[in-house]
Length: 70
Image (cartoon, rainbow, N blue to C red):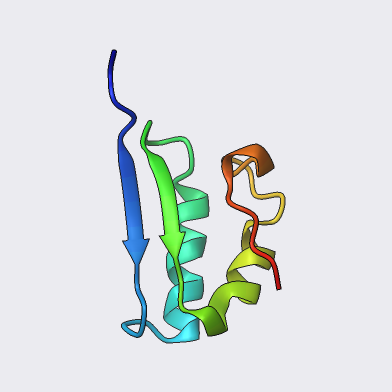
């Protein structure tokens, strides 16, 4: 049995909101390039923005995402 590869990004306090938006946009553009599971861990204050950016994004189907509740 093979293991699922995971690429996780936990940017905590290291990116501004705009830098985080650019990172998420780049990940959306590169969706499907890797077979790894992509996990994002934005700061609490960025959750609403990241959630709205990923809503319906190709390569990020709902069943593969963890629900973010406000």
